[in-house]
Image (cartoon, rainbow, N blue to C red):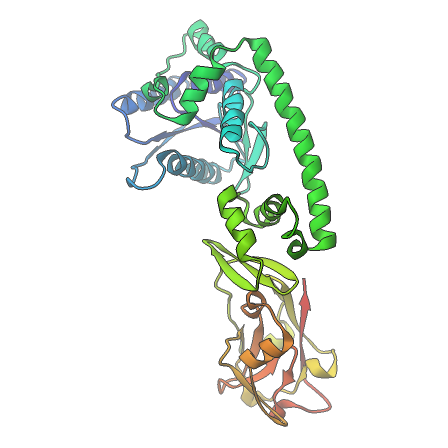
Length: 399
Protein backbone atom coordinates (compact mmCIF):
# COMPACT_ATOMS: atom_id res chain seq x y z
CA UNK A 1 0.00 0.00 0.00
CA UNK A 2 1.37 3.39 -0.99
CA UNK A 3 1.75 6.21 1.49
CA UNK A 4 2.03 9.94 0.83
CA UNK A 5 4.91 11.87 2.40
CA UNK A 6 4.31 15.61 2.74
CA UNK A 7 7.64 17.16 1.88
CA UNK A 8 8.42 20.88 1.95
CA UNK A 9 12.14 20.49 1.31
CA UNK A 10 13.05 21.58 4.85
CA UNK A 11 15.16 19.42 7.20
CA UNK A 12 12.15 17.97 9.05
CA UNK A 13 10.33 16.67 5.99
CA UNK A 14 13.51 15.59 4.19
CA UNK A 15 14.50 13.55 7.25
CA UNK A 16 11.03 11.99 7.27
CA UNK A 17 11.15 11.22 3.55
CA UNK A 18 14.57 9.59 3.85
CA UNK A 19 13.53 7.51 6.87
CA UNK A 20 10.51 6.21 4.95
CA UNK A 21 12.66 5.39 1.93
CA UNK A 22 15.25 3.58 4.06
CA UNK A 23 12.47 1.52 5.65
CA UNK A 24 11.35 0.47 2.14
CA UNK A 25 7.94 2.15 2.28
CA UNK A 26 6.12 2.48 -1.04
CA UNK A 27 6.15 6.26 -0.85
CA UNK A 28 4.98 9.18 -2.99
CA UNK A 29 6.35 12.64 -2.16
CA UNK A 30 3.88 15.54 -2.23
CA UNK A 31 5.24 19.10 -2.37
CA UNK A 32 3.43 22.45 -2.43
CA UNK A 33 5.14 25.49 -3.91
CA UNK A 34 3.36 28.65 -2.70
CA UNK A 35 5.72 30.94 -4.67
CA UNK A 36 5.99 33.26 -1.66
CA UNK A 37 9.79 33.19 -1.28
CA UNK A 38 12.72 33.60 -3.61
CA UNK A 39 13.94 30.21 -2.35
CA UNK A 40 10.65 28.42 -3.07
CA UNK A 41 11.90 26.95 -6.36
CA UNK A 42 15.09 25.82 -4.64
CA UNK A 43 13.06 23.80 -2.11
CA UNK A 44 10.96 22.26 -4.88
CA UNK A 45 14.11 21.22 -6.72
CA UNK A 46 15.54 19.64 -3.56
CA UNK A 47 12.48 17.41 -3.29
CA UNK A 48 12.39 16.62 -7.01
CA UNK A 49 16.10 15.72 -7.15
CA UNK A 50 15.90 13.48 -4.06
CA UNK A 51 12.90 11.66 -5.52
CA UNK A 52 14.60 11.25 -8.91
CA UNK A 53 17.73 9.84 -7.21
CA UNK A 54 15.65 7.30 -5.27
CA UNK A 55 13.20 6.55 -8.09
CA UNK A 56 10.06 7.55 -6.21
CA UNK A 57 7.10 9.57 -7.56
CA UNK A 58 7.03 13.29 -6.80
CA UNK A 59 3.82 15.29 -7.13
CA UNK A 60 4.05 19.10 -7.01
CA UNK A 61 1.24 21.62 -6.59
CA UNK A 62 1.75 25.21 -7.72
CA UNK A 63 -0.39 27.27 -5.35
CA UNK A 64 -0.86 31.02 -5.63
CA UNK A 65 -2.13 33.03 -2.67
CA UNK A 66 -5.24 35.06 -3.65
CA UNK A 67 -4.05 37.94 -1.46
CA UNK A 68 -6.92 38.09 1.01
CA UNK A 69 -7.47 36.41 4.36
CA UNK A 70 -4.93 34.75 6.62
CA UNK A 71 -2.10 33.29 4.52
CA UNK A 72 -1.20 30.56 7.03
CA UNK A 73 -4.81 29.33 7.26
CA UNK A 74 -5.17 29.44 3.47
CA UNK A 75 -1.90 27.55 2.97
CA UNK A 76 -2.91 24.86 5.45
CA UNK A 77 -6.25 24.31 3.71
CA UNK A 78 -4.54 24.14 0.32
CA UNK A 79 -1.89 21.62 1.30
CA UNK A 80 -4.15 19.26 3.21
CA UNK A 81 -6.68 19.23 0.37
CA UNK A 82 -3.77 18.51 -1.99
CA UNK A 83 -2.49 15.69 0.23
CA UNK A 84 -5.96 14.14 0.36
CA UNK A 85 -6.37 14.42 -3.43
CA UNK A 86 -2.94 12.87 -3.97
CA UNK A 87 -3.75 10.03 -1.59
CA UNK A 88 -6.96 9.33 -3.49
CA UNK A 89 -5.14 9.43 -6.83
CA UNK A 90 -2.54 6.87 -5.70
CA UNK A 91 -4.89 4.73 -3.62
CA UNK A 92 -3.12 5.63 -0.38
CA UNK A 93 -4.83 5.66 3.02
CA UNK A 94 -2.09 7.44 5.00
CA UNK A 95 -0.34 10.78 4.66
CA UNK A 96 2.85 11.20 6.71
CA UNK A 97 3.78 14.70 7.87
CA UNK A 98 6.96 15.82 9.60
CA UNK A 99 5.62 17.59 12.68
CA UNK A 100 8.03 17.12 15.58
CA UNK A 101 8.22 17.72 19.33
CA UNK A 102 8.95 21.43 18.98
CA UNK A 103 5.91 21.81 16.72
CA UNK A 104 3.67 20.17 19.31
CA UNK A 105 4.94 22.42 22.10
CA UNK A 106 4.63 25.48 19.88
CA UNK A 107 1.02 24.55 19.05
CA UNK A 108 0.20 24.13 22.73
CA UNK A 109 1.69 27.50 23.72
CA UNK A 110 -0.10 29.18 20.80
CA UNK A 111 -3.41 27.62 21.87
CA UNK A 112 -2.93 28.82 25.43
CA UNK A 113 -1.88 32.30 24.40
CA UNK A 114 -5.00 32.70 22.24
CA UNK A 115 -7.30 30.96 24.74
CA UNK A 116 -8.40 28.69 21.92
CA UNK A 117 -11.07 26.00 22.12
CA UNK A 118 -9.74 22.91 20.39
CA UNK A 119 -10.03 19.14 20.10
CA UNK A 120 -6.74 18.58 21.89
CA UNK A 121 -3.72 20.52 23.13
CA UNK A 122 -0.55 20.20 21.09
CA UNK A 123 -0.39 17.67 18.26
CA UNK A 124 -1.58 14.08 18.26
CA UNK A 125 0.11 11.16 16.55
CA UNK A 126 -2.65 11.06 13.96
CA UNK A 127 -5.78 12.85 12.77
CA UNK A 128 -8.44 12.28 10.14
CA UNK A 129 -8.88 14.57 7.16
CA UNK A 130 -11.58 13.74 4.60
CA UNK A 131 -11.23 10.04 5.29
CA UNK A 132 -7.43 10.13 5.07
CA UNK A 133 -5.27 9.32 8.10
CA UNK A 134 -2.67 12.04 8.73
CA UNK A 135 0.21 10.47 10.67
CA UNK A 136 2.94 12.26 12.64
CA UNK A 137 5.72 9.74 13.33
CA UNK A 138 8.35 12.32 14.39
CA UNK A 139 6.77 13.78 17.53
CA UNK A 140 9.51 12.29 19.72
CA UNK A 141 12.23 14.23 17.82
CA UNK A 142 13.44 17.77 18.42
CA UNK A 143 13.90 19.93 15.34
CA UNK A 144 17.68 20.08 15.84
CA UNK A 145 17.81 16.27 15.91
CA UNK A 146 16.17 16.10 12.51
CA UNK A 147 18.60 18.66 11.12
CA UNK A 148 21.45 16.55 12.48
CA UNK A 149 19.95 13.46 10.84
CA UNK A 150 20.09 15.21 7.47
CA UNK A 151 23.70 16.27 8.06
CA UNK A 152 24.77 12.80 9.21
CA UNK A 153 23.14 11.07 6.22
CA UNK A 154 24.03 13.63 3.58
CA UNK A 155 20.41 14.58 2.92
CA UNK A 156 20.05 17.98 1.23
CA UNK A 157 17.54 20.44 2.68
CA UNK A 158 16.55 24.09 2.48
CA UNK A 159 15.93 26.59 5.26
CA UNK A 160 12.75 28.64 5.06
CA UNK A 161 14.05 32.12 5.85
CA UNK A 162 10.59 33.25 7.02
CA UNK A 163 11.01 30.92 10.01
CA UNK A 164 14.05 32.91 11.13
CA UNK A 165 12.01 36.06 11.83
CA UNK A 166 9.40 36.84 14.49
CA UNK A 167 6.93 38.03 11.87
CA UNK A 168 4.47 35.28 12.79
CA UNK A 169 3.23 34.73 16.37
CA UNK A 170 4.26 31.08 16.25
CA UNK A 171 7.83 32.02 15.29
CA UNK A 172 8.08 34.33 18.29
CA UNK A 173 6.93 31.56 20.64
CA UNK A 174 9.41 29.14 19.12
CA UNK A 175 12.39 31.48 19.32
CA UNK A 176 11.60 33.01 22.73
CA UNK A 177 10.26 30.01 24.66
CA UNK A 178 10.94 26.69 22.95
CA UNK A 179 14.46 27.06 21.52
CA UNK A 180 16.05 27.86 24.92
CA UNK A 181 14.48 24.75 26.56
CA UNK A 182 16.48 21.63 27.32
CA UNK A 183 15.21 18.25 26.13
CA UNK A 184 14.22 17.42 29.72
CA UNK A 185 12.16 20.60 29.92
CA UNK A 186 10.49 19.86 26.60
CA UNK A 187 9.67 16.33 27.72
CA UNK A 188 8.20 17.61 30.99
CA UNK A 189 6.03 20.12 29.11
CA UNK A 190 4.86 17.40 26.74
CA UNK A 191 3.85 15.25 29.73
CA UNK A 192 1.90 18.23 31.09
CA UNK A 193 0.13 18.53 27.73
CA UNK A 194 -0.88 14.88 27.80
CA UNK A 195 -2.29 15.26 31.30
CA UNK A 196 -4.29 18.32 30.19
CA UNK A 197 -5.59 16.32 27.24
CA UNK A 198 -6.70 13.54 29.58
CA UNK A 199 -8.60 16.01 31.76
CA UNK A 200 -10.07 17.71 28.68
CA UNK A 201 -11.40 14.39 27.39
CA UNK A 202 -13.00 13.66 30.76
CA UNK A 203 -14.61 17.10 30.74
CA UNK A 204 -15.88 16.55 27.19
CA UNK A 205 -17.40 13.18 28.08
CA UNK A 206 -19.24 14.72 31.03
CA UNK A 207 -20.27 17.66 28.83
CA UNK A 208 -21.79 15.35 26.21
CA UNK A 209 -23.64 13.48 28.94
CA UNK A 210 -25.17 16.74 30.17
CA UNK A 211 -26.10 17.85 26.64
CA UNK A 212 -27.84 14.52 26.00
CA UNK A 213 -29.67 14.42 29.34
CA UNK A 214 -30.44 18.11 29.97
CA UNK A 215 -30.51 19.49 26.43
CA UNK A 216 -28.39 22.24 24.90
CA UNK A 217 -31.07 24.90 25.44
CA UNK A 218 -30.98 24.42 29.22
CA UNK A 219 -27.17 24.60 29.26
CA UNK A 220 -27.21 28.04 27.63
CA UNK A 221 -27.95 29.31 31.15
CA UNK A 222 -24.90 27.50 32.62
CA UNK A 223 -21.82 29.49 33.62
CA UNK A 224 -19.85 27.32 31.16
CA UNK A 225 -22.35 27.79 28.34
CA UNK A 226 -19.56 28.65 25.90
CA UNK A 227 -17.86 25.29 26.56
CA UNK A 228 -21.09 23.32 26.09
CA UNK A 229 -22.07 25.21 22.96
CA UNK A 230 -18.61 24.66 21.45
CA UNK A 231 -18.90 20.95 22.22
CA UNK A 232 -22.39 20.78 20.72
CA UNK A 233 -21.49 22.67 17.52
CA UNK A 234 -18.02 21.27 16.88
CA UNK A 235 -19.25 17.67 16.92
CA UNK A 236 -21.37 18.53 13.87
CA UNK A 237 -19.24 21.15 12.12
CA UNK A 238 -15.85 19.45 12.68
CA UNK A 239 -14.34 22.82 13.54
CA UNK A 240 -14.30 25.28 16.44
CA UNK A 241 -15.59 28.83 16.54
CA UNK A 242 -13.77 31.56 18.44
CA UNK A 243 -14.73 32.26 22.04
CA UNK A 244 -16.06 35.71 21.10
CA UNK A 245 -18.25 34.18 18.40
CA UNK A 246 -19.55 31.56 20.85
CA UNK A 247 -20.30 34.20 23.48
CA UNK A 248 -22.34 36.11 20.90
CA UNK A 249 -24.19 32.92 19.94
CA UNK A 250 -25.07 32.19 23.58
CA UNK A 251 -26.83 35.57 23.71
CA UNK A 252 -28.56 35.14 20.34
CA UNK A 253 -29.78 31.65 21.19
CA UNK A 254 -31.45 32.99 24.31
CA UNK A 255 -34.57 33.37 22.15
CA UNK A 256 -36.03 31.58 19.12
CA UNK A 257 -33.92 32.32 16.05
CA UNK A 258 -31.90 30.81 13.19
CA UNK A 259 -28.23 31.83 12.93
CA UNK A 260 -26.06 31.42 9.82
CA UNK A 261 -22.68 29.72 10.47
CA UNK A 262 -21.39 29.68 6.86
CA UNK A 263 -21.75 26.00 5.97
CA UNK A 264 -24.18 25.24 8.83
CA UNK A 265 -27.18 26.83 10.54
CA UNK A 266 -28.08 26.66 14.22
CA UNK A 267 -31.61 27.21 15.51
CA UNK A 268 -33.16 27.87 18.89
CA UNK A 269 -36.74 26.59 18.88
CA UNK A 270 -38.41 26.73 22.28
CA UNK A 271 -36.60 24.10 24.38
CA UNK A 272 -34.51 22.78 21.47
CA UNK A 273 -31.22 23.83 19.90
CA UNK A 274 -30.65 22.28 16.48
CA UNK A 275 -27.75 22.43 14.04
CA UNK A 276 -27.83 21.30 10.42
CA UNK A 277 -25.43 21.51 7.49
CA UNK A 278 -26.60 23.64 4.60
CA UNK A 279 -27.46 21.46 1.64
CA UNK A 280 -29.66 21.17 -1.41
CA UNK A 281 -32.04 18.33 -0.70
CA UNK A 282 -32.72 16.03 -3.69
CA UNK A 283 -35.95 15.37 -5.56
CA UNK A 284 -37.03 11.81 -6.31
CA UNK A 285 -39.06 10.95 -9.42
CA UNK A 286 -41.06 7.69 -9.52
CA UNK A 287 -42.20 6.96 -13.07
CA UNK A 288 -44.59 4.04 -12.52
CA UNK A 289 -45.93 1.44 -10.13
CA UNK A 290 -42.97 -0.87 -10.67
CA UNK A 291 -40.52 1.84 -9.57
CA UNK A 292 -42.83 2.57 -6.65
CA UNK A 293 -42.53 -1.04 -5.45
CA UNK A 294 -38.73 -0.92 -5.67
CA UNK A 295 -38.26 2.56 -4.22
CA UNK A 296 -35.54 2.70 -1.56
CA UNK A 297 -35.86 4.65 1.65
CA UNK A 298 -33.76 7.78 2.15
CA UNK A 299 -32.43 9.74 5.11
CA UNK A 300 -31.67 13.43 5.41
CA UNK A 301 -31.04 15.54 8.46
CA UNK A 302 -33.56 14.67 11.17
CA UNK A 303 -35.80 12.35 9.16
CA UNK A 304 -36.00 9.07 7.28
CA UNK A 305 -38.62 8.47 4.59
CA UNK A 306 -39.79 5.35 2.85
CA UNK A 307 -42.72 4.06 0.84
CA UNK A 308 -44.44 0.89 2.00
CA UNK A 309 -47.48 -1.29 1.39
CA UNK A 310 -48.46 -1.13 5.05
CA UNK A 311 -48.94 1.67 7.54
CA UNK A 312 -51.39 3.73 9.57
CA UNK A 313 -54.48 5.29 7.99
CA UNK A 314 -52.92 8.76 8.16
CA UNK A 315 -49.90 7.43 6.23
CA UNK A 316 -51.93 6.04 3.32
CA UNK A 317 -52.60 7.42 -0.15
CA UNK A 318 -54.55 5.87 -3.01
CA UNK A 319 -52.75 6.27 -6.35
CA UNK A 320 -54.01 5.68 -9.87
CA UNK A 321 -52.16 5.41 -13.16
CA UNK A 322 -53.01 9.04 -13.90
CA UNK A 323 -50.98 10.19 -10.87
CA UNK A 324 -47.68 9.00 -12.32
CA UNK A 325 -44.96 10.14 -12.43
CA UNK A 326 -44.92 10.79 -8.69
CA UNK A 327 -42.43 13.31 -7.26
CA UNK A 328 -41.07 13.32 -3.72
CA UNK A 329 -39.57 16.73 -2.98
CA UNK A 330 -38.85 19.14 -0.11
CA UNK A 331 -41.92 21.15 0.81
CA UNK A 332 -42.13 24.94 0.72
CA UNK A 333 -44.30 27.20 2.82
CA UNK A 334 -46.55 28.08 -0.14
CA UNK A 335 -47.48 24.44 -0.81
CA UNK A 336 -51.12 23.64 -0.14
CA UNK A 337 -53.08 20.41 0.25
CA UNK A 338 -56.85 20.14 -0.23
CA UNK A 339 -58.62 18.43 2.69
CA UNK A 340 -62.25 17.55 3.45
CA UNK A 341 -62.78 20.75 5.39
CA UNK A 342 -60.78 23.18 3.30
CA UNK A 343 -57.21 23.78 2.13
CA UNK A 344 -54.17 23.88 4.41
CA UNK A 345 -50.84 25.50 3.60
CA UNK A 346 -47.53 24.00 4.71
CA UNK A 347 -46.66 27.25 6.43
CA UNK A 348 -49.80 27.06 8.58
CA UNK A 349 -49.24 23.36 9.28
CA UNK A 350 -45.66 23.95 10.42
CA UNK A 351 -46.68 26.79 12.72
CA UNK A 352 -49.62 24.87 14.21
CA UNK A 353 -47.43 21.76 14.71
CA UNK A 354 -44.52 23.84 16.09
CA UNK A 355 -42.05 22.40 13.60
CA UNK A 356 -38.55 24.00 13.83
CA UNK A 357 -37.42 25.87 10.73
CA UNK A 358 -34.44 23.56 10.14
CA UNK A 359 -36.79 20.56 10.16
CA UNK A 360 -39.18 22.23 7.71
CA UNK A 361 -36.49 22.15 5.01
CA UNK A 362 -36.33 18.37 5.37
CA UNK A 363 -40.10 17.87 5.20
CA UNK A 364 -40.93 15.99 2.00
CA UNK A 365 -44.27 15.99 0.19
CA UNK A 366 -45.68 13.77 -2.55
CA UNK A 367 -46.71 15.52 -5.75
CA UNK A 368 -48.50 13.84 -8.66
CA UNK A 369 -48.16 14.32 -12.42
CA UNK A 370 -50.48 17.33 -12.30
CA UNK A 371 -48.15 19.16 -9.85
CA UNK A 372 -50.72 18.72 -7.10
CA UNK A 373 -49.52 18.01 -3.56
CA UNK A 374 -51.39 14.81 -2.69
CA UNK A 375 -49.65 13.75 0.52
CA UNK A 376 -47.95 15.48 3.45
CA UNK A 377 -46.44 13.54 6.37
CA UNK A 378 -48.30 14.56 9.52
CA UNK A 379 -51.40 15.59 7.57
CA UNK A 380 -52.08 12.66 5.26
CA UNK A 381 -53.39 12.57 1.70
CA UNK A 382 -55.61 15.10 -0.02
CA UNK A 383 -59.37 14.55 -0.24
CA UNK A 384 -59.32 13.03 -3.74
CA UNK A 385 -56.69 10.39 -2.85
CA UNK A 386 -58.31 9.00 0.28
CA UNK A 387 -59.85 5.52 0.41
CA UNK A 388 -60.22 2.69 2.88
CA UNK A 389 -57.77 0.64 0.79
CA UNK A 390 -54.69 2.79 0.13
CA UNK A 391 -52.27 1.60 -2.55
CA UNK A 392 -49.22 3.14 -0.87
CA UNK A 393 -48.07 4.42 2.48
CA UNK A 394 -45.54 7.25 2.88
CA UNK A 395 -43.77 6.95 6.21
CA UNK A 396 -41.68 9.53 7.99
CA UNK A 397 -39.66 8.88 11.14
CA UNK A 398 -37.22 10.90 13.20
CA UNK A 399 -33.59 9.79 13.14
